[in-house]
Amino acid sequence: MTQDEAKRAVAAVAIEAVRPGMRLGLGTGSTAKHFVDLLGELVRDGLQVICVPTSEATRAQAQSLNIPLTTLDETPELDLTVDGADELDAHLNLIKGGGAALLREKIVAAASARMIVIADASKKVETLGRFPLPIEVIQFGLGATKIAVAKAIEAAGCTGPTRLRLAADGHPLVTDSGHVILDAALERIPDARALADNLAAVPGVVEHGLFIGLASEALIAGPTGVERLASPA
Ligand SMILES: O=C[C@H](O)[C@H](O)[C@H](O)COP(=O)(O)O
Image (cartoon, rainbow, N blue to C red; front, side, top):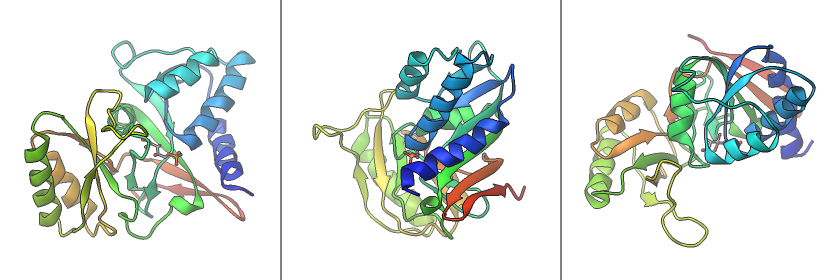
């Protein structure tokens, strides 16, 4: 099974959790894209759902499939969000934001009664941190924010360089909400909760990619099939 086939396989299992009338959060990324494709097929066949996309890319995809969309202003409480992850541990703590959608993804996940993470087995780790942690920051005061972020990282027992994410054109990547992203290459995050709290306290940090206690379950596609992990909480 290729990595893309694995992503499709977990998306196909996740789609079974969708019920008529549900209010859904639609994730972002190459795995979530499969889920949205499959949802589009069900909608074409008559399924009625209403969805909030977590990025402009997902909005465009959903619109192209005629999936009915709403906003969290009109529909502030959702039944289920299905989204990918860059890393997840056994406690279903996640790193997200490799596709720069972490801010809207976290708002949508927090507004959802349930969040199912879909991923291929390469995303499962013992300790978070191998994937550089995305930190979304306001452009104003970037130099000062970068120093404060480095101190927050150090105070949480982590080390590693933090780099401004660039787009393909070499300019700083700007998120859907108009911010920029610092990627912190930490290798290992011994206390994700402490790091999350420290980063959240830095002025200029809008959001970080640590999703702690948000996922209710994870579907992981490996060589022997799809493994289901439930949140220990
Ligand atoms: O910002 C992007 C999101 O957090 C994605 O869900 C995450 O990067 C995983 O994406 P993919 O399924 O493409 O690996």
